[in-house]
Image 1 (spheres, one colour):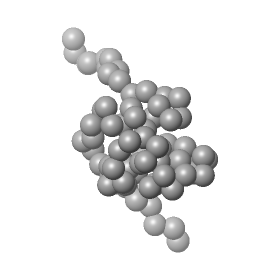
Image 2: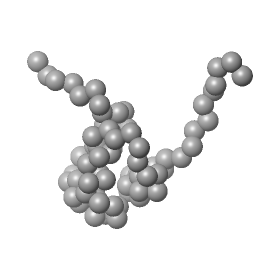
Image 3: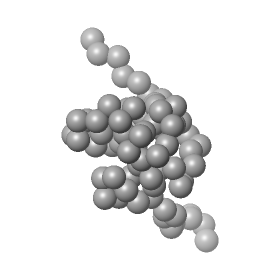
Image 4: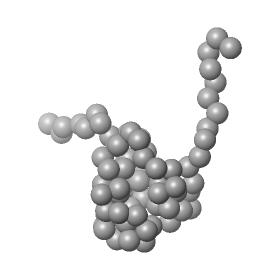
Amino acid sequence: MQKTDTSKTPFSHFLKQKRKETNLTQQELAQKAGVGLRFVREVEQGKNSIRLDKLNNILSLFGYEAGPVRQEISGR
């Protein structure tokens, strides 16, 4: 039976998938993006609070960018 990790987010899965599709190790991704290896590991492990500028350094390697997204608020 496969154990599921509930701490991981859809984004952490997305980043890991993109990294593997480009045949990069975590260390190589960190170097190319100009961020630390620890940051890459934390993102892939689903850390909830991360720096957007560093995240965008990584995402830009895959042609993506993160930013604010408007949410609908109930009762307004």
